[in-house]
Image 1 (tube, rainbow, N blue to C red):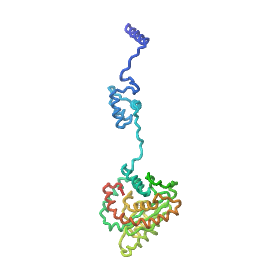
Image 2 (image 1 turned 90 degrees about the vertical axis):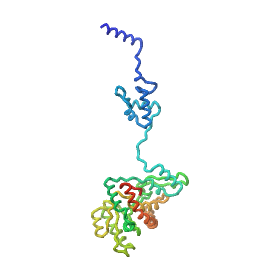
Image 3 (image 1 turned 120 degrees about the horizontal axis):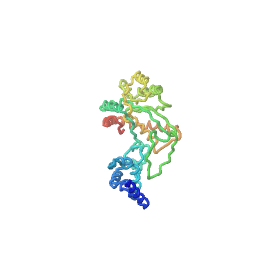
Image 4 (image 1 turned 90 degrees about the horizontal axis):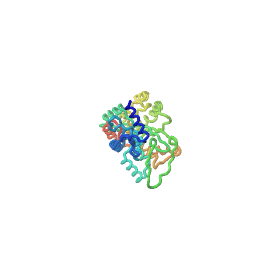
Length: 353
């Protein structure tokens, strides 16, 4: 009882004298720094901060204290903020499609040469399309089967595909590199849905190009069969080289669109006697007619040319298909072995073509 009263008198004396207990070094605030941080912990935070880690990641990596605790991420955040070195982290976004070196080359190419911007778009806007594991195996098997075929084999193959042309510019390219020096480029329009569009279907053979067929509306199986009967088959059977060699077979290539792969469409080819090339899915880079369409598109929109009406654009498309496209046919056919070898080297994935 006596000891209790003695402790009470001492406590009352301390309270009336205004003396307060001194805080421990671990809990003291030094200046405007965050509390409860030792010099060793501050050094840890500085080292981890230089590795571009977030405050949460830094707090999780600090060495535990003797009492098995760590400073919270708020304490780390206040410490970095009071030092005036709060890091601004880069916001997530899409990955770059081209390297900085290629970007500099493109800009230099546009500055020194008055080529149309759409021609540069084809290099800058090359996107990687998704190829599943199943389609990758099929692409690889196709490339290995046909990579050693001679040029005489590809001369009898008819490549086909369709293309959309827009009034405001090439279809499928959203960005452009413009000249920063030299004459100011002409202003361009940007309208809804490209101002209007037209779809064309065409084929390419070593011996010539087919006539362009304008596709009205969506192309289902029935409309595709009508195109085959009215356009492709008469053109293929009346080729000049077939008049001398009527028994020489030719092979028709088409993609795996629903209308192309329909059973009724395949029965039509069996009836007419046209062999189909077993084309793998997701393989536009192996089809040379895709590059031919890109050339025609660049010529149609040369010097960033735009059109006000479809009646103004259609004659230009027909003229480019008739005069410009035939110049590149032989070179595109000769690239088939290289395309297939590039597909093998890439393991069935997308190639540079």
